[in-house]
Image (tube, rainbow over all chains, first blue to last red; front, side):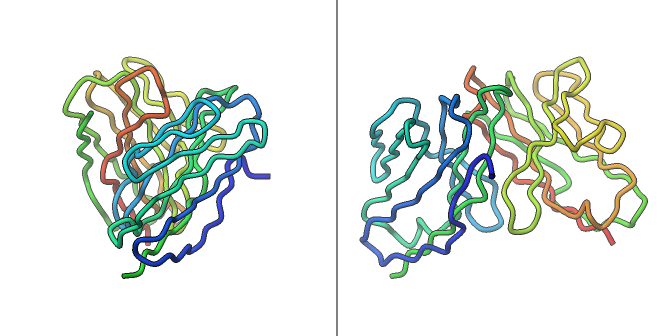
Length: 111
Length: 115
């Protein structure tokens, strides 16, 4: 079992729709969770962090965390073609304190 | 925030040679890390670059193959030694400015191709 699992996609949504990206993790002791966005040929950039169960909103982005289910998600409202990228879920390991990345989900937003 | 410059941005190398990648941060940072991203794959942590002391390597990575230096709070190097085609990858320098090791800034990466 991978430590951080994501569906590689691609996830294709029409412009203006809500994109839902999902992630599960295996380390029940993890407390810190992150979403990074990586455009093709570019380096990852942090877009959201979440530490508590529930929702955290930042503009068009909402991160959702359910520690009991070991599940993290990212919702992108009013998706734009410029949102087309790979979204990496990352978790800090409870034993190592290091950031562990999932393989990423490729999102395609079609005009 | 931090702006991270890496060089070279890309290189083509011959089998058996070594290459050093440089990473410069525009401000003092508490943490620096080196990641590898193989084609179509996610990021794998190679090591934590410790200022003034030996780097801390992750499982599967050793100092003889990936020697790392960090002489100060803004600069680090990663050397990929005795390269083989399996080392063809993107190598990314990252840095954190706070306590949270999850909030990282990344350099643009160094794409190495080993023939």
